[in-house]
Length: 578
Image 1 (spheres, rainbow, N blue to C red):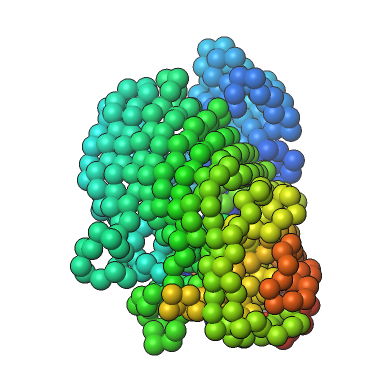
Image 2: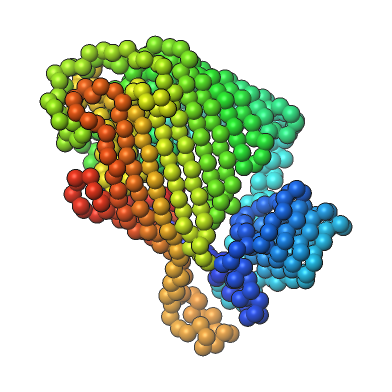
């Protein structure tokens, strides 16, 4: 497998700064320094960023917080430690132990209680590392100020014209460019309207409306707290299958730079109506009715930096026609940080059921083998006839993750993803799933576990397609253990003379995160195989290691079975694997 986004992307890496270095840079008394380090390593609840302990919440074991503010309106049984933020104990809030703040303040409201001592320390700026840490906190404060100003601006309502790039650069439409008005009214129950046209660069400079897309949404908040909204949308979009495997940025850069598109796509045109509820910041529920026309799309010829003269991977031939479905999703995010979680749970469940419609799998002619004929053992037929799709099926998807600190600056993280048919029936290609490649089983090539969907290819309306996308059901498990390294390179001896700072100018601090991981996945097929034979993939395993430098991870993975070459595959990810 090609290396994704190569060393060009390493330039955007931002070295991670651990709480241990921030505590040590404050020049605290040795006993207090060790006390704080033990809290961040121990059983105390870890919190990153702004947070509130509600009036009905009871936290046992104490809190070790980073980059607040932390507001306590409930009960904390134990000590509270904060690095780089304020602690606000509101009326009715209580802490049975002591409160220690480094780089912030403690504010105790009337009616707030602290059973132990209250201590605050300013961050030392006598050394370079301490000054850099304080700058980081100042940047966080500036970001909070910008967010407050933005919220006040939105409360007054606004209207603007927008011109922005779409979610991803891909081999079907090139770069989608969205432009149009966005309007939001003032008040506690604002009305929001977006009416955006989509120009697709693959269509060329001519703004042909027949080749453009659109996305229009109107939503109304209810209840005065922006926790419930209803709305409707009309759209004509190029939609990826299995968007969950990679971020849009990773998929776009792989396509634009290395001529490697890790997704497949189809056209969704229609309208929907929805109701959305967010009773808590950590919970979102959505119920949606969709009325859509689905159309297969052939690969285009968009620009890429390398390998531009090579043909793009074929697209799957989806079932075409109209379909009306009901989709329900529930997301619960209890992680301490959505972008870089240290602990907590994340769960997302989705269920979709067709209620009416008419889908047909189009005919494919001049069928020929394509690459290795995985999971099939009979000759490829000369053609596949058009076949109506039975819409009596229900699909589901669950993404469950657990992040567990197991020591200071180390984690054990688990993820289970399962999706596909809930009724042991075959699915149209646009509802199928495939495994293998960067976002699922990186030790294997892209879409290797596709239940034979890419073992042959045929012709439809003059374009070449694969007959399907993947499996009717799949399951993926991922386990990783993460730890941190502290690497310090420089000239001079920092302990030689603390008043001399010349050595800081040639000092380099790196704190990469190392990762060891194991993945297992499998796919199932429930139709009568057009090519003959059993198309289930069996369970595939891979393992690997990597280093994460800020937002850039460099990894190597090795397949452990599957009848493939046992060769390591190197790859780069922007951010965490999951």
